[in-house]
Image 1 (tube, helix red, strand yellow):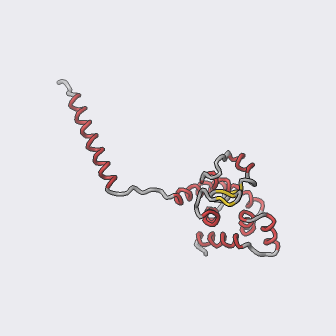
Image 2: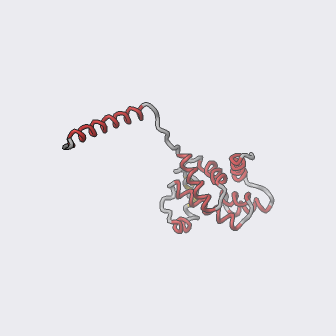
Image 3: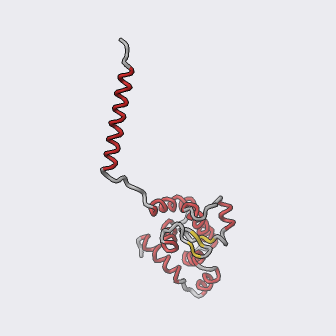
Length: 166
């Protein structure tokens, strides 16, 4: 018995058309979930923090304080989600292969790697946060007199709140 391949092709074409119509109708009847930028950035934070051994709640607190999750935020030479200084971290960017400072992943990478370096040098959360957020001289001046700068206090408040202890 000979197969009728032209009939099968017609049926397959019709079935494909019906399927495409159903897919179109079903996707128009409800909204597909879209990943928010903040959720995407948080996934970057988790991945990078795991690689560098940095608490992701601290990075989240810094991002929230420094840029309010605005990837193109700029303040002088500080740019991006983590407000990384393009003046002070050129070598770091080159070493890590970062060319786009405003790319969210790259910016989080730069800031987190810097935090990791600070923690390797100083085993003091308050000092590390001040060093990240302030000029070095300001951070050390506050640290020497046992105080925490306003910016660092705000970051630490966000950090402890995110961790559930604020």
